[in-house]
Length: 263
Image 1 (tube, rainbow, N blue to C red):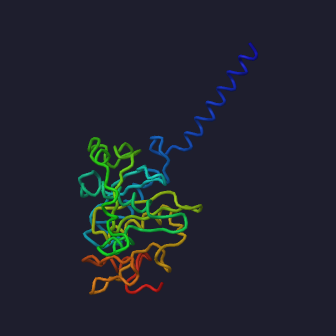
Image 2: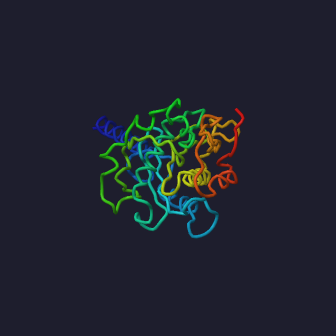
Image 3: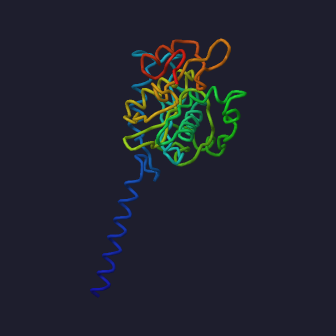
């Protein structure tokens, strides 16, 4: 009886330790998917970073935005929107935000970050990444699943799944804590230049901007506005300017640089 009791106790302790380990790996969504960002915290930070009715502007159309986070394994683990309901943002940008996060995560390394904005020039005809945008199409069963009332909540149907997709314009940035890359963030819903500015703000407020290095030697994975009238980017990582003041706002934020970049 004593041996049986001891064996039962040992199994109970083992089960308890396993449960605690699993809980520690779970994200705040309770989905069993590890995530560098808590959903409610992401919502709060996104709303503070997107201020269409006042406060510091991000340029563009001052639209509400979607934000999506993937973990380092490329699994969608958090999705949020800045408005009060899903229809307050461009609905098509929910999937684009997730694809931007997927892209920044896929093209960034522990020691070098690559924002989606840094991929634009290389992905053009003749560029060193030409064809990348169509190399990994989004997964239809992921982006078209679920009920609309769950979009942007802790129960968003994309959470726990890989979304795929490669986006080669602004709005996606890798996330780094003090130990290295932990995933990526995608923001979409406005001009690609404004999306980059919002993503930069959100990442900073999340405290996940410990960027080790990037293609821009001075500003790491900042957006580079150096495409000239001839369509060429001296840095090789340039992004076109949008129609508003996004480029100047990016400079003010430390999120971008205009003109040639010394490499």
